[in-house]
Image 1 (spheres, helix red, strand yellow):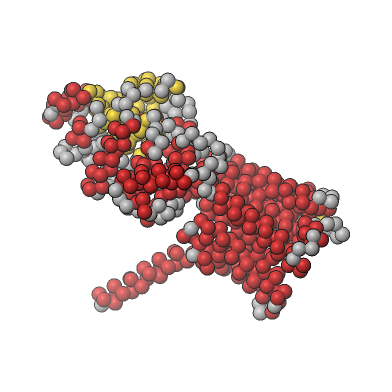
Image 2 (tube, chains in turn cyan, red):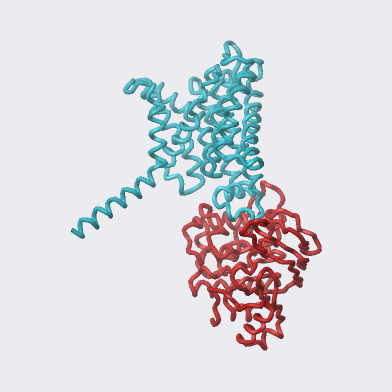
Amino acid sequence: MLFIIQTALTLGCTYALVALALFLSYRVLDIADLTTDGCFVLGMAVSVTSALAGHPVLGLFLALIAGAAAGSVTAFLQTRMGVPSILAGIVTNTGLYTINLMVMGWSSNASLLKQATVYTMFKDLGIGGSWSQLILSGAITLVCMLGVRWFLTTRLGLSIRATGDNREMVSASSINPRFTILIGLMIANSFTALSGALIGQMQKSADINSGTGIVVIGLACLIIGETVMNGRKSLTRNIAACLIGNIIYRFIYALILQTRILPIECLKLMTAVIVALAIAAPTMKDNAALMVRIRKEKGESC
Amino acid sequence: MLKIEHISKVFNPGTVNEKKALDDMSLEVKDGDFITILGSNGAGKSTLFNAIAGVFLVDSGRIILADRNITFEPDYKRSKYIGRLFQDPLKGTAPHMTIEENLALAYLRAGAATDSFSRIRKSDRMMFRDALKRLDMGLEDRMSVQVGTLSGGQRQALTLLMATIVPPRLLLLDEHTAALDPGAAEKIMKLTEEIVNEHHTTCLMITHNIMQGLHTGNRTLMMADGRIVLDLDQEERQKLTIPDLMQRFRQGAGSELDDDRILLSD
């Protein structure tokens, strides 16, 4: 049981960065950014390749830069080239497949054997014992979350929020939406890449297909967190929801993995259903209310 | 202050829907002028504002603001010194951000702060509080409330405050009270005059209320077919009766004042 909790917390903290990225793109900027899947693998590939060369810490920073670059391509396509935002993400995502193979030396996977990772280096410091992975991931994620919370109240951060909240007020508020979308997507994707980078070094491997469905899982975590935390009410809660949702999701995941209540292959379908239901909930509620009203009126008129 | 020299704008050129929205129009606005603009439907009033604010570039002519040629400047750069209010109170504020965050955004963007990472200070927050208090709507005690929960009148008052919290060089008011209930409209109008007078802000205001048009500010323009057909200074306005005004509009425009929303009395 302790192992389940530990795994759930560690993975939850690490994957929380993906949810944080989706919070920035999907909630703050109101853009469905589908660069996520490829960007996650990009971060993983860059970080593992760098660790293979003996530079695990540098690998994390390179992953951040690579993610920001991927985000800027998506932003460029949609703000300068007139590509619809969803398509822009898909186009970048597709292109990243080749880039990712290239980063891993034209191989579909890369493994770290004896090489040091940020996790082994941290463990060697002797902090936290068997909890050291959790402590390191948690600390990095916490710093990112606090950074986002701070950033969103700065001049640029407020401008990015206004861009997503009310497109009509933007140009009348001296905000250049091209710039705010560019910065927003760069930050979001650098978090996604960082998450991939950490997972890669934690699992000591990178695989070209490990990003499949990450965007949906990230959204599910975000929505679960928002529901639990009543997160749309305030910025702080919404950012905290990224982490809370992820821990809950990973807990369920670890539980199923351990107990085999469901075949583990079912998890992606379950995730998809959770996301679809959560996003559809307001519409379904409205429809249900209307049906009740119609039935009631009909009953009265008879 | 503001010089508009022979600007023209044609929408949908070369099609059956071709429309000459601005027709070789010129206008000179002096520093501190408060000009009201009246006119028929489709006379080009809002188009004029869009041209000044840079929503589109004019086909020909020049726009000069404070000795600077802004003809080709993009809209987001112009809005640093041109404040604008629309008829729709939802257009000027971000609904999921709090009152304080909306004010902070306006203040940090229009002010001298050029640092992307600048934030508001405690003293700024106190200043926002005082400014909100002046609206007399109790908003100063609800600064952490999301703007989406406010009424239309409250949102428009907040938009007015946001547009003027750093006094702009030019304020464009596009029927900014038309969508509000009479009480709120009156209140917003009073606040507008107070704020504009206090800073001697140069201001252009479109209105459908003739009495308001003649009694607010110091100069009245009437527009038709993308041109200014009547330009009345303070002295002329005071002597004028509404039938005189209609008569003179007819002479200038060659047609009746045709506006389905015009208000002849107040």
